[in-house]
Image (cartoon, rainbow, N blue to C red; front, side, top):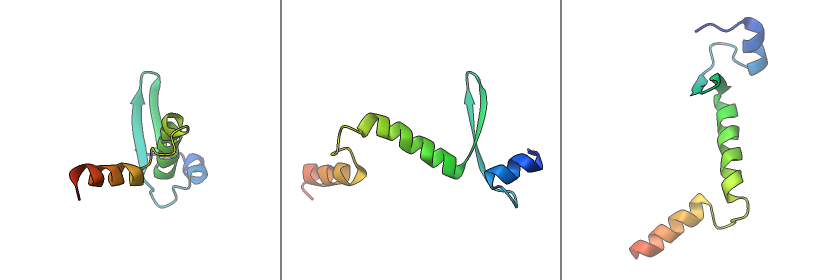
Length: 69
């Protein structure tokens, strides 16, 4: 897929960078990998902001504890 040069420049896609394509009911969303990571983090914060124990490290520690490791 080709994007206009001015859009590629704004997104920092010089030299053929990667985009994530997301289909939604409203259309298609194109995001850079960095934008996708930021979006995922924002979604996660929505569900974990008031739960300091909701981290990957805490989850793994709990799983180790549950398994007796």
